[in-house]
Length: 94
Image (cartoon, rainbow, N blue to C red; front, side):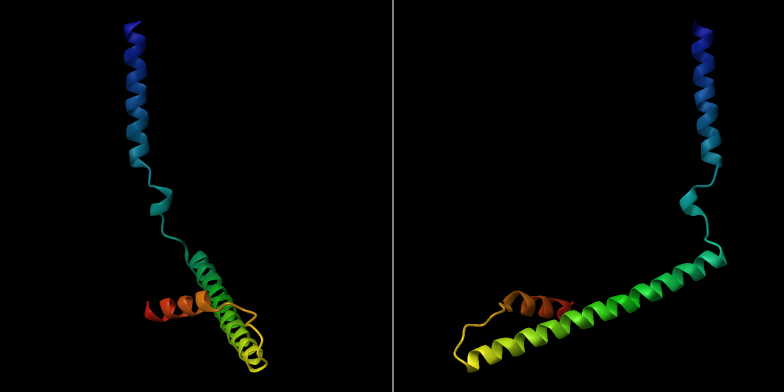
């Protein structure tokens, strides 16, 4: 019984030592092909981000125009823009 437990503990120790010698998956350096793929994907995401942010800024401009037209005709504003104005000032300040 004691020998079996000693053998098991030696096996566990041996397994841990073997694992410590293996390089971690996160420590591997990506190959040139995968780096190029990552750069291309990053460029695509940056382009999409520019388009999405530009669209949202244009939507805010249009909402302001609609609200101005409503005020010219003595109507209440259709779009509450306080939250949008706060978001705009936070992003420009950061």
